[in-house]
Length: 79
Image (cartoon, rainbow, N blue to C red):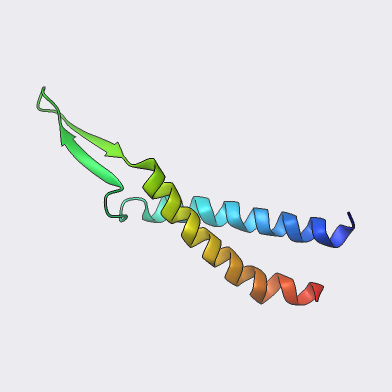
């Protein structure tokens, strides 16, 4: 492998991970059905998180932002 594919791969992974964790932290509360409040038999309220829904939507949004940033800023310099 030459240096250019390694740089591109690292850039994509870094962007995807940073945007994923940012989106996950910012919007996990606003995803419909992501967090449900359940009242137990002891009348205490618990919050149950639907991880596949929260992670899936966060990954989708992070992938879109990563694609936009990659094709706008990184890809033109390697063309």
